[in-house]
Image (cartoon, rainbow over all chains, first blue to last red):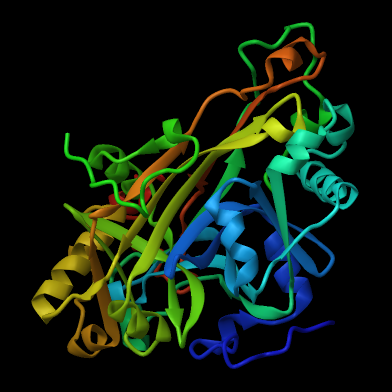
Length: 216
Length: 216
């Protein structure tokens, strides 16, 4: 199994057993949901911006408006992209041992702008089809103006780590005898019923890719 | 209604209608779920770290191990704390107008360490009781060693903004005539059934604060 090199920055200082560097684990967490936060500096000040990421092979991608500050500033510097899925509350017998079950990935790197309309279109198609398989080909095609207004960044998955916590609380040994309830409370993202656009012609049926959507 | 001052950094450059600076909106988003990401630099390199936040009045708090790099580095610099709740996929008639419904808050400031055991204990009690009302008093009390091992940071809610998108896709006017399904697909965090710790005495009943938990 392929592993990311452990660097001074990505090595885990604490709770090593929670860390993982293998690509299989990292990829599974990235693929489990698109929401990520990207940290970098704008005018020398650090920003933490939410956006969607998607992965193709050993690269992670995100996109946005070419006019926005977000993507103008990112390609010139090292950034940190983090994906976090919260899986539950860990309810212990002492406040100190309360915790959270989660899966997260933190990646470091300098993003590059995806160049070329064909290349950009191909990346966006992958992005849309990863969420709604087959949807891209049913859409009104991208036009030149839209492609120009869209910046896609790519970053190689090279430096970073996954962190995972799962399972029961770990209490102090003597606390297990206390008459205090302990356990876990699972949480997860779930999708509800798709709602047609108010202006949608009711004769247009809901497509299978939307009907079958499940939050990965 | 009290509003945050709009600064050069926090003013919204694009899609102004999505932005909000009033405390009521900002507080509601912070209170809607504890997961946040904090961005700041460690050894000159930007990091994006997931953690839990909680709010008391005009301050936001987060905590962690006193031994970790995360909280050692944060109080000496400006950070950016972001909370993002994803509310749904916005499914448009063109790829370009696909979007996401969400509520997010981005806050800027220099955190301060919460000093004094009594003060720290009070903050942690609020944190626990905001998630599981009344739980703190049922727990084995914090001891001095645990308090020493825990660092709490506070940051005044002074500079920042909320961003919200909701509702249907906004397609190009001419695209509404196309026979393409469009609408929204809501997503949300939900809690499952609490699971007792494997080592829990089955005679200990599940407390009301756990039973009644709902993801805010």
